[in-house]
Length: 427
Image (tube, rainbow, N blue to C red; front, side, top):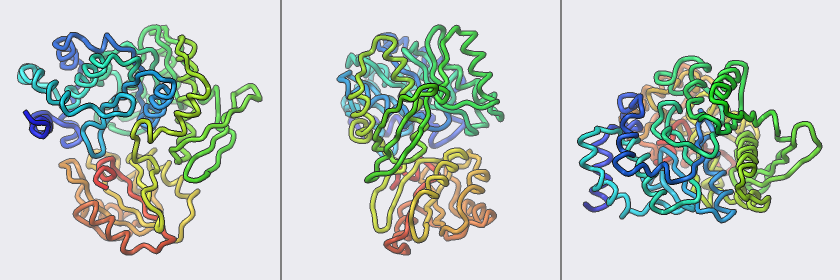
């Protein structure tokens, strides 16, 4: 097969969550285990870091990978979904998986696809492990797709587990309380393996502590160990002073990811790095500084308060659930502009009402939809938005909506594109 034929096969033959939603979600690990067995269990031949969480797990994964690359470790990175190119999901030292490997792997696994009937995500997880093992990476950062306990990635025994935070998302699959969602994420905690938890609250802390105790796993609550004492913006970068709780020790870091919500992810990343150092990984301070200030260049991360143009200031952010939108709104309050234009599209299975209720009413809205079956129609989104006092017009495609916003915007205005990973991907 050609590469294009391979991609067409993968996207059309396999159930794909980004297109279908819950119908594509496989609630057990049997398929992944079967695929890995057929491949000789490549996941057992690589060292890994496993990352779960409702928000921030993508940024955290990329930040950790950038630091490890800066040391000189051959670093794999598996994330999802992709924004534009399928191969974004798989990287080694920032380089995407070769087209040739994708085709070779798919041809090799095709007989098993007919036999096992895996989902699209299950195939991509097996592909990542196989490529990382063949390339003999020193370490691979593995981001969960959805949840943790039953996520396809949960067949590894990592050096370290990381859980960024818990919020309301995918409640139809993970549960309708923070405790239930936390229990699913806590499923990545492995016996005796340290787990770093970024943020906890009264509902989630006991869940993590109980699972960690049952597994006899050291648990580190990152926000209790460090905090962002001060931060400021300089030239579209975030300069953060991190203080160690209980001491006067402070360190300053410059991040090329300017969203101030990255301060929380930074605290999590620094504790994860500390735990790796305790396990014998050589990670000097200079590598931490270099990695954090070059995340986008080293790992290809996009869509996290990403400024794509000025006059008018145009920003992309993949925030799409209640907590993600709350962080975006907080960021908007720190941003200077004359008038705000928001291009927004969402998918049907999100808690759309809670997200829309948070958005600023004084903005002009351009309601739209990504070109996937899961997308809520632009007409329906506009009607829901109107119900929350969000006014504007609707457009059948993302780029038509963006063009309309650009045509209407003054040079001192701001355009924000948000609501869905797939909307940002189309821009």
